[in-house]
Image 1 (cartoon, rainbow, N blue to C red):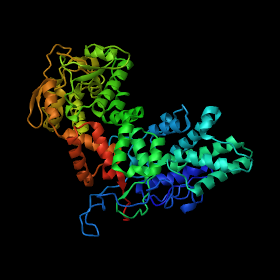
Image 2: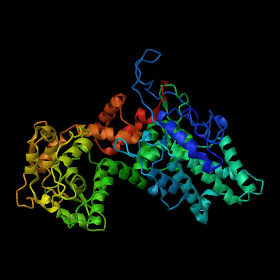
Image 3: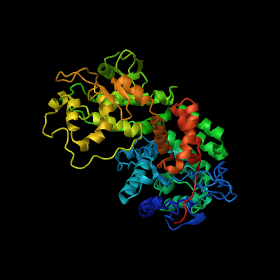
Image 4: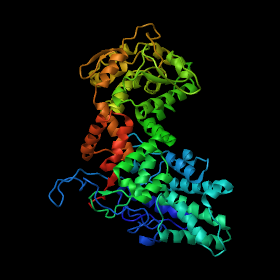
Length: 590
């Protein structure tokens, strides 16, 4: 990014064409976002800070150990692998709602009614997935108007923004202070003098048109909330054509951290660290990761990363046939989601390493889920952590959330369960089925009858077709090993038709197993889990696809992570300390 985006003196005309153009340019990511209201260069709102601007060490330079995107550096030494780059990054709907809440104190959540975020590589924070259409900008413009109206109608909330009063009608010192203070938080960096000048002019024009002081500030805030520097996380490449790596700026790093761990704007501590220039220090960065993960706001990281990686968000819309499973309820669904998130926290902050992910004999149950599992719920109203080695349930694939999500609404789906584990936990590429493969279930079949049948026998008949056999040999064993759990995760010994359940099988590598215990023992020895979670978390943390040039970084991260016990907090810390998270480069001209 060579220049910062500019803001307009009119929040309506500010972005419709200009933001759409900015979004289009995001895919090319040259960063040359043109003036949004006739301005450009260092005098425009959003222009790059000059050397020595508040915030210290923003001058591009070399990250230690990074000399470029591979190959040989000018002095003849071997260059480090490519740190790559992230496109200009629009806030997703969750980030938008969290940010306006923290910025203004409002309770409204307009993002919930916005056009649904696009997902790429399994996550909704991938920068290159976000464009900007007229309809999308219209929703931001309307939301800005409504949010400012809400905030300024409440004296307490208004006081968060309007922190002083002018000494006279011609005094602009208070206006400039408000703009500078609010702008630091809203645009997540200090404003240039020229930016403050333009916004002050907007306020002055509003006063001349009959607005009172609060109204003039409200117009400024509306414009700022409709601008590129608010709606996008913009990172600057001083030379967009250069592929030499350089550190991300201190305020850019503050935003990378805050949106990774909290899905919201940087707090006072992060902005202070950016101002001091300490976020380029590995020790300080490590301490920030510890602080942020220990904060209650880190629940956003759990619900966003784990919610998407482990399918818990998808469970929210999963359909269960109540005629087949009369015990199903929305309360039980919520209990399953809560347990899935708590299970993830066990590996994030509970001191447990990822080698136990398939085998940890721990559950988090409230009354509805305990009844499903046939165990005691413990005391209290929320989920209780329960260790029960006497039952037949353990590990992630024993959680009702996973077992329900990977079933049909009316019966288990061993093929889907196996496919989900292979794709999401072992990162195995599964080709799509060949065309015209007959479905196992007839569309006219009675769901209750299908639920009662022996699924193993039906799949064996399906695999008689050699076209089907090759794929099902890979996909089915894991799922058949989980057949003791029905389509909402309740344990059973027999199918409803009376047939005894056979949960034995042989994995594609030749490992035989009988039941969940042996299956999960075998899965826990598959090193692809550690490779996969590393790639998944790097994808989420970097907001981009992990590519071949990242291989040396992922290997280094995994080596350090393994020696540190394989807790997920250690993994995300190693990612934050890695060159791809701390650095970026421009994009060579084609």
